[in-house]
Length: 197
Image (cartoon, rainbow, N blue to C red; front, side, top):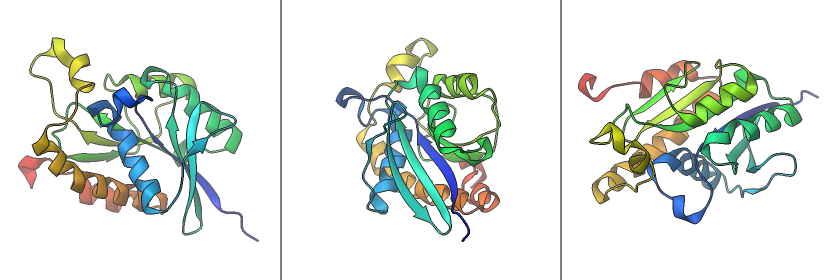
């Protein structure tokens, strides 16, 4: 019998009701939606500070995770899950927000720098490398660089929320393609800037 390959998809965000549906929690929103589409429920993980749910995609077992460590310490939960479940770095996908992309834009990369994102910075620090896949979702830029913290913790406008429905669906599709080894197809579909469309 061939054992199913285990992969890990982590949505980044901050735990707590006050942070729900804020820009910085877009990673949470995607992974929560992915679980909903599969009828999977999140439970408190017994070996990491995270909520986790298991789904199956073909012959791949996927662990969906929402770290409960707050954004700046996301790497603790990612490291602990990888270690306990014996997940290789190339089998990890991090879903997060990105200030440099407009709302409605997605970008899948198989590795890269943290680009100033504290959650990605924490993951690199705790797993010792940046060679993991990341699906970035645009949240737009603040009007002033000084207002970045308030901006990422703010909620989306009514107009942006309408756009987000399609974004969440596309992001879930991107996660499924990554799970089944179709990252190149996902990048072709989603790594488009608006001015190139």
